[in-house]
Image (cartoon, rainbow, N blue to C red):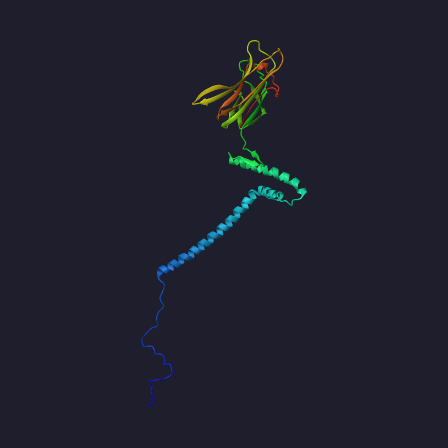
Length: 267
């Protein structure tokens, strides 16, 4: 008897049933679609920002190089001068470059204000204040005033004002100042001693006050000879203070610029 239930052939597929449909692929949820759109937009924004910053950085770099072109050349030249293999013929140019470098450091010290730089152990200090005044003859020949007047156009002034009418120096910057005064008398007075006095005037709460900073006497042994007195000292001066030199008699002075002078400088 033949077994009809056993065979080596694969059974044919079952035909689809009538009225059945193929499965429809599932759609992505709305929130996943929105998330994908947001991620794509972020990538585009980040890429645009990166390109913008890159181009902006290049533009700023070009502006910086154009603005500080000379300074950069000096610094590069200094690096070449520091090279041990530099030839002797280029050492002369290195000195010129070093002078330019000092000027750059001076600019930096001025910008920093209170910062003191050093170059080769020598401090490069910020500009302070100073004045060196040359005496001016009193053409009025008046004995009512004993305050010396000075040549403004022939004197040296930096951060100090010279008030012509009251004949005083006005302080701009607060600090310690060395004050010096030299007065030469070419004549003598029979009754009163020859003296020079450095006076300080200050205004506080609308009221002016004066005090003596320095005072020096001059004694002549023989009438007609010259007598010179010099005095100096360091004092704290505030902004707006005024300094002047008072003498016994203006008509007795020697008005040579090397004989009578007055000055201050910040220490």
